[in-house]
Image 1: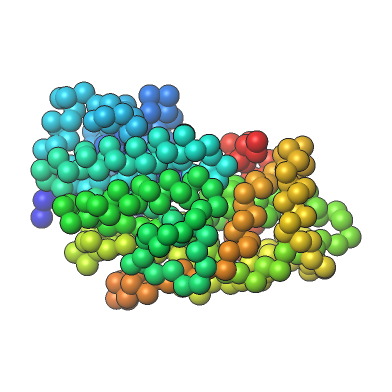
Image 2: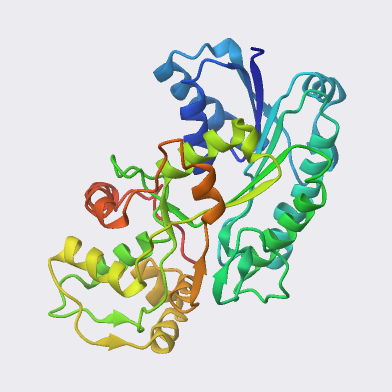
Length: 365
């Protein structure tokens, strides 16, 4: 069996890092190229060295290369392009702006223009076995009800420029899905490793923990809104296992997968479980989402709480992300999404230790 040569964008981001940690333990890996912005090259090299040393993966089998997905040919030199063209078998495209509060022009440049450039790059690879694109379940935007893995453009509106530009980027990838062997993953909100509780950034579910941490001394803490919509949260280890399996099996070619919780809890249940685990308290009363958003519109308050106002939008959209196709294709793999209630304690234990680490807290504007 010929060894594979991997090309990643989005390293040293969270999902890319965890995928590579898994990849270096596999036998059929000949080389890994990591495309990184010049200002992140040193950080990327240090992180990859640490990963490689921990797994006894030879340093001569990986390289960080400077580039920029927003530029033509990914801003690579001709000799580098020719080398990659004749060797790369798998491309993992994860580079994107994930900030819910991102400005439109920045999001469009990175998420849409960047993806168009990566698409063009993969179309020229002569040994390509698979193009793996990381979209998001939230390309569904403000749609409500059941969302199928086979659906994309349903005339939907969007809650923010992150969602809108990731939607437009996936539209571009879908255009070439019949030209190159492609697999598209749409994860929900990714959080910690289900066993170790480790994570890279405190966003998503962690905004809730930041809120609880500031409110923990109050005699009572209310629910935020009715919370009768489903929460869409998935541990990173499930994302990695499912991705690695479906990216290397023929069954994944030409498919789009929702990497979402097949048995999700309502936001109200999640809120209650997390508050109980973190503070020992049970929520009392309800603070309307509209009032909560008004408070978080004041920069001083949201910075003190360490909560992004835009995160509240995900308490309000009544959406069910169907993941029937991915569940069917994983049926015989032994890979299952852990139950959220079994992960919360490990998640919170890790948060308690690292909550004051400025490298893990998101900068709230």
